[in-house]
Amino acid sequence: MQTLFADADHKNKNNDFGIIDTIIKICLFFILAGVPLIINPFAFDYWYKPKIDSIYCLLIILAIAAGIKYISLKKNLPVKGNPLIIPLIIYGIASVVSTIFSIDTTISIYGDLFREEGIFTIISYLIITIIFSTVIASEDQLHALLRGLLISAALVSLYALMQYAGYNPTEHFIPQFRGVENRPGSTIGNPNFLGKFLVLIVPLFMVKYIITEKRTEKLLLLTGCSISLGALIVTFTRASWFSFFISLVVLGVLLRAKISWRNQKGLWALPVFILCFIAFVELRSPAQKTTPDQKVMPTISKKIETTFDVKQGGIGGRLYLWEKALMVIKERPLTGYGLDTHGIAMQRFNLEYARKFAHSGILDRAHNNYLDIAIAQGMIGLFAYLSIIVTFVVWLIKALRAEERPEQKILYCGIFAAVCGYLLNDFFIFSVVSVSPTFWALLGITVSMKRLATGQA
Picture 1 (cartoon, helix red, strand yellow):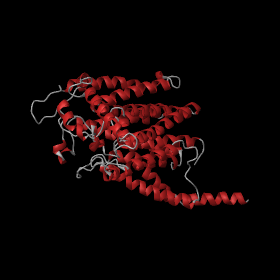
Picture 2: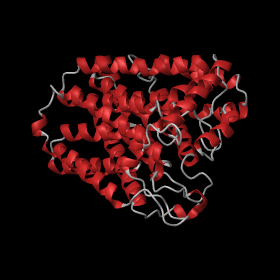
Picture 3: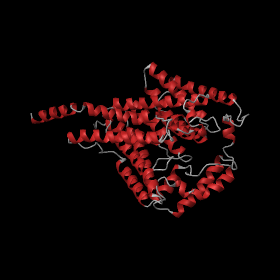
Picture 4: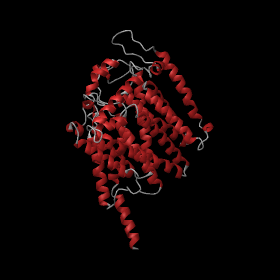
């Protein structure tokens, strides 16, 4: 009888937190699906700072709401069995240490003006992972979050296609940043970052299409996937193209014995769409301009042709940056130069790089996320980061093998393929506040999938 009354009292307490639960759900949804859409054309930086500032605010609200709920219920966050907690804490400590020993503590705390990845941002990424892995309350909420992410990605991609078509409603606010190539960055801010974002998202469209039975939902998912593939193509980002191809191979291998590809008729339309869209892009305009102010219209063939160009960029530019990055790392191998201080660490190479590759910008990244982490946080930080990645991948493989529900297994396959593509893409690009929160949230969501499947609230 005493147990019965205790259970009833516990249920009443849970019911008292309806508003708190709603606040938590809204904040989770906005971090995952709302932040990628945020753009402020009236600000100096209208892609990155508005996004990270929004994340700070949402995390503060989340922390207060979750704190009220769990303290009142006298419960702890369900971290038992969470494989990422210890690696996340270790990486957080490594980030703090690199900030303490930074060559510019102010930058490492608050972040570079255009990158915004100081200690507050890095800690926010880690908190996002912990929050998404612990406070999602049900499988229905989890799938609603994934649907929101896919809808957001479709809108981001649609805006990118609008930009490629020549209609950019926010461009007139900052004409000096319009660039010379017609490569869309959408609300993500840069075509390379947009490509990285879509590499992470498109496999999720595909597996959600496979596990969904409703025709209308299948049609919507196929449409969103097609729009996202089109946007990925017109980013003209070779690293993202290659990474996405590898993620598709991984997905195909993982699903080869789990589904009948012959029954997935809608997915067979995607290769046809890709080929037709590539042909359209190639025929639309040559990669040249007739007036000084006219934007260059890139072509896929030209991008592929220049991949191995060692004089004007392509792999030559990357190899140069990686070589110099290794030189920089050797000078401060343990704790690095400090978060977001890459511009200071690599400034000695600006002039040489400009002359060699006809580049007018400054070097503030090595365009390899793993080298960039080593520059900022030293080998200690890099090993700590890799410990998170390795722990997650090994855990996901075990979860995939142990999972018995077909839908859950297929979703695991999609996440695994997406993460593989993302991590491969990181060999050619770096972390950015318009994409990284989605990646860290997806890690947390995946842990929540397993937690909820085993009945842990």
